[in-house]
Image 1 (cartoon, rainbow, N blue to C red):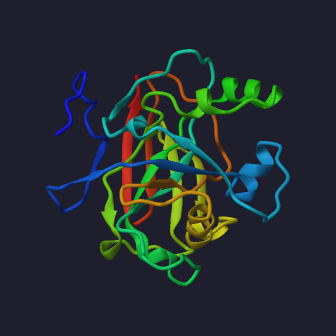
Image 2: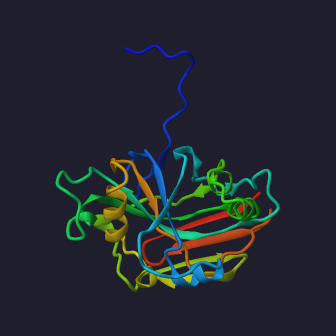
Length: 229
C-alpha cells in the first residue's frame, strides 16, 4: 500500500438523483463554439469541421448554491451548458451509432469564464487555462441518470439571471451532437468512467456580479439554482 507524503485531496464528486451514491469525477472536457449564434457573438467563423476542446480540472466543480466571485477578473461571464456524465466506456471502437451508450447521466452547469483574461490570451495567442480552469468555475446540478432523462433535439437549455432570461436554445441548435463530440473526443483521449463533458453554450453570454442569482435549466430534466457571492 502506498504511503503518501501528505493526505491526498478528496475525490471530486457529484450528487446523483435518486441515489445515495456519488459520481466520482475523472476529467472535465468542454466543447467550444458549439452553438452558431454564440460563435458569431464571440467573433468566430461558424463552420462544421472538428470540434474545439478545452479542459477544466476535476475539482473546479461546485454544487453549493453560493458561488464565489473569482480573483483576478473584472468581467466574469456565464455560459449555460448541458453536461454529459460518462459511465463505463464501450469496449469497441466508438462510432456515431454506439457513442451514446457510454452516457450514464445528464446535468446542467455553468462554464464560468474570466472573459477579460480570455480576451487577453486570445490577443496574445496564449492558452485559455487561467480564464476557464479556476476554482469553482464549473457549477453543476445533480446528475440525472440517462434512464430517467428524456433528451431530444427539442429539449431547451436556458439561463435566467435575477429573473431575466439571458440564454435560451434547443439542443437541436448544437453544431456538434453528443455523438459527434464523443467520437471526436475518443480519437484524442482515452475516455473514462467519471468524465464530464460540457457541451457548449447558446448566445447571450454576459457578465455576472456579486449578488446575482441564477437558474440554469435543462427543461424537463434538471435545474441548477445559485448566486454569486
